[in-house]
Image (tube, rainbow, N blue to C red; front, side, top):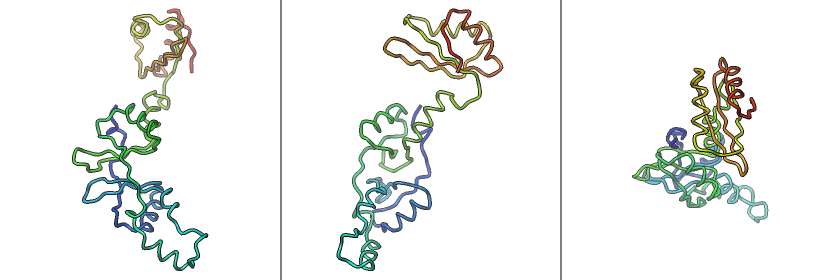
Length: 210
C-alpha cells in the first residue's frame, strides 16, 4: 500500500512570516501538534509545539510580562522553525514510511510531489491505523492463528486450498516468522467460521480461534 491511500490531503500550512501566536491558534483550533511551513508554495520545514514552547518567554527573564507578550506576539514561525528534511512521495510504500519514521525518530512525514509542493501528510497514528486495517482486526469475521512448527514449501497454498475446497473464502491473511515457529493469521466471514475451524483441524493444523 502507498502512503497516498492513507495520507491527509487537505493540509493546513503556515509561512515563515506567520506569527507564532497565529500558529498556536491554528494548532489549538485543529488539535494539531505541528504545522508544515511553505514558502512560495514549496515545503521548507515544520514548526512544532516543542519549538514554540522552547522559544516562549521564560520566567527567568528580567522583562516585564507586557514586554514578553509583546516580543512573543512579534515572533514569526521562520525565526524558530527547524529544518525538517525527512519527507516522502505519494508512491512511497507504507512499510518504507514506517521504517523511515523509526530510523529518523519522527512522528510525521510530509508528502511532496516532484515540484516540492506538499500534497499530504502522514502521522504515526495513520501508519498504525493502516496496519490494523490491513490485518482486518476491526472487521467482522472469524480469525484463526495457525502455528507451523516446521517451515515447508507450499504450506500456505495447502491451507488456502483446503479452505477453497470447502468453499470458504479468506478476507485477510498475514504471516509472521518467529525464531522457532511460523504464525499464520487468517480471517473468514462469521458464517463460515465454524466450518473453517473444523476444516483446519481435520487437515492437521494446530490452531487457535481468536
